[in-house]
Image (cartoon, rainbow, N blue to C red; front, top):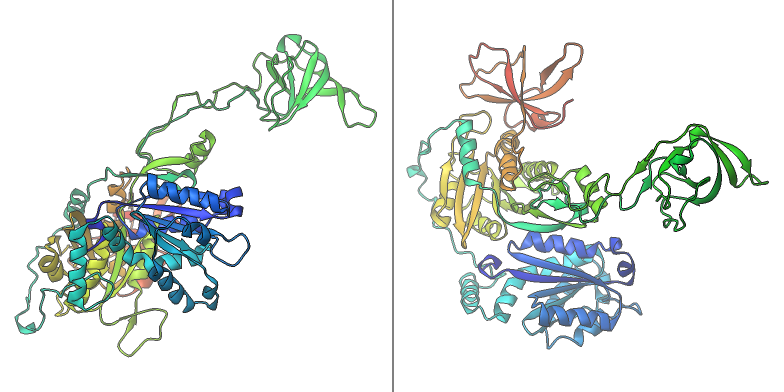
Length: 616
């Protein structure tokens, strides 16, 4: 059973903190928990709130979320320690109808393996109606760690409370099958590898060209209609799923463009008595400006009523000041002002009800600034695919551990996850699948539970232990759209789709050689993820570079890793190779910002180069 087979889960995340209630920007545990919830469950809604360390305030939210909003799970963070103001457990005990001590025990016992301070936790967990309430620590680290200790049982707990009997039976059967464990219930793979002599000697999949492979991927990876609401200051690089209108004019008042003096234009040049001072941020002056008067004003300050021009300080001189020089009493206007001079009128930047940002625009820094200016603190964006990353192979070891004989460190997974992060996509690490059908199936099952896109490296060539494609087809009923592409590196690249618990999944099987892995991620996965969230510029730009010295002796088109720069002396782009291009040499990607497409026997020295990073 997985949470995908259930109705959407509703989580409430309640931050309990006097400090955070005064300044919500100091709340780090609440947003981190929301991020963890969204990562671990693909079908979920989240509501959040911050309350002070007051029993009645905490109880009020817990009762409302349980009884009115019908949350499946409430996570509280903060107020579980020994301090005088720590009262979250007391408030929780007054709300819950049944204790759930196993959840508290799981968190404390696992936390004690990390720090002895865990014994000071007073966290309470329990049930109210059909809602699970779980107290978590107040620190970002403690909250996310403790959530990690109990997250696997939450879907089953909700299924029990909501009386989803078919799912409960399925889980119990899976536990019996495996003799315990975490209840995920992986059954053995249907794939057998004991008859190595009868394995295929030739791939059954046709060799296709890169453009055809790209088109297949895009055809299958249709743009999503699903949206979500995110905080404006966390929306950069996301795609707008709504038109954004100005609900108020900008500026909302008549404002000075310069430091100087607010005056009446009809008074012309000459002396003015200084009446008051208006600084940016001050409330508007209420008294009407009269003829012969001026208001000393700073940039951005509101104009007083009656003023219809601003004279910059450079066009004035002092006639009279206070004895101590702290005040200007009379000035002289050297140049007669014009009506409306140096004034930002109401709505001159943005008119009320005007369209400011368009649906399908990609949000950049300036967009975030505009959203802040409009006071639009939340914005609707298209949901991004959830991505899981898996390495495969008996030879793969953790980079943090000492290598055993015959092992190599797992470079591919960390390259892939950080390459995705470079283009602002988060991903989840699903570890290493060994060269065994049961292991491959088990790891894939876990990844399919909570992700839309699965990316693996290795296990897709013609070796006797390369079983990924077989497991996909025989255990998951996947359709392999292609498994051989006419390119170097990356020939065994595989793309498949399947339906898992009623949801469409995309699978990218990348070669095990490190460079092949990185190149194919750039060619297929990054554009696909962009396309799926309605990004208009989903493809990397391609430029032409003349007089290339690169040569390819292979029959396959080579995606040569290069450094591209612009030479201002000749007004043209130029490139240089990153060195030995063997597919196992990851260093050929270091410093590269382009892939030059080099074909055997091409007499032209002009190459198409795909730019995937900034120019050197």
